[in-house]
Image (tube, rainbow, N blue to C red):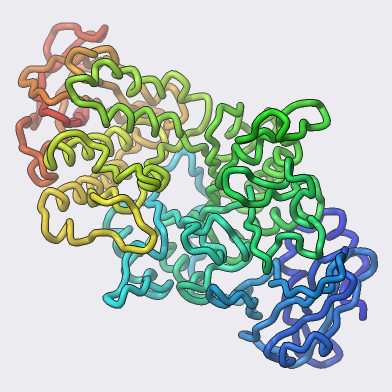
Length: 629
């Protein structure tokens, strides 16, 4: 039975269909006056195919699929199948083996270790976020505040019986918490279905399905709807770099290397024991492109953080000589991956104005965030991994030895304007025996939390969008563990940790209220060093300003354990400079050693500036002044 038009099959085969989720998988249809479901799957090398499910007693002979032209797509229509029905595809693969495979286009799955797909229509959720969507499409995220709370859905909070919060639970408590903390966005670690929970979602088995661990696709949509009602954007981790070898999923789907490469030098990832997509195959590129668009279209996400981009871009990524195959030009660049990423970024930008595409790219690949027309990859933002590593290495140091590594704090600004950077303090830095952020800070509890406030203050005051992994804001002492929730007792029992949490909240509020901290993030005129060479005192100072210079902030940072009661810093404008933020205040757990309600100009030049001010500067403190017009 022919269930697709020839034109549809031609477009899908040639890789021109960006909305496969409207075509393949389990689609509700009305045919010859009967309601039912069209089941379809791409398996060009299978010898036969059928669909088995709870609607036919899981009998492989009940509902055979027929090939649709020469497309490699098998399909059949079954009347009476309803939402919630469980199913799999039963294939006689190219080797003559009978195998059960889950639907690559499945919208909903049983909870692991079971793996049946579940018939579900994700196109009819009753959204109420039009105001948010209109505002997003009319805005420019690069010239807007962006502070992201990165989180793992299953381990933020748990119930008393150790069960994770559901999407419904999170739509209340999580939305309220992030709103109260002042973050502009939340970023979920991968939400697509994954059989192996300790993979944190990075080994995806169901690319089109929000994980069923926490609820239904509709309940996931309701969670995003609730965030939008609270004026909070939602970004999700997206993993097109690789997929696991699970027998029931994409691996050797029809008995051949269908989604991956046959040659392990191209098709296997040596670090993760996973398989690499064949980006040069039109159908595979189509599958991934459609998947990226699916999350924007059906779930109204506001951005994708694309995982492990470097592993996609380089054919020799984590490989020794002889373990990789050069491209057709003899180079190590994965030209097919470059083409795919550019295509996806182009389509997202055109179809979903105001949405962001964020690259986790750990090398110096050029022009990651430059326009495609300029030879770039077309991403909106790139994680600044160099900033993250340099800052954490610096903060680990004994304060008495920090002057040896002072350049680590300033180095990022020497290359900062080469890309549109996001400054991350992510989950990657609090796992695999690296300890927590608090655990990286030197000294006792009080000085450790002071240094953590200082680290966050630097992150928020320097140019670049912000990202903080959950638990950092409360001074989590233990390394993150996906099987445990955060140690919320810290903010119940310890006023110092409550102070840190309030500091992050106030940082977010201050950041959002001051246009100079985000409007010109990627314009060199928005940042100016005052003094970046006071290695002896371990003090930095710089100015942030907006595009029309109606606002300017002076930021002074003391990385030392010393209290400077009369520190002189240059200013370029005459007037009264008023202290508007100070990490040493007692409400944040500080000691209130420095108070600078307002300071008067000194008619003496300093730091190559015409005027100067004298301030009190507490140990491990960041202070911000505002020029009062």
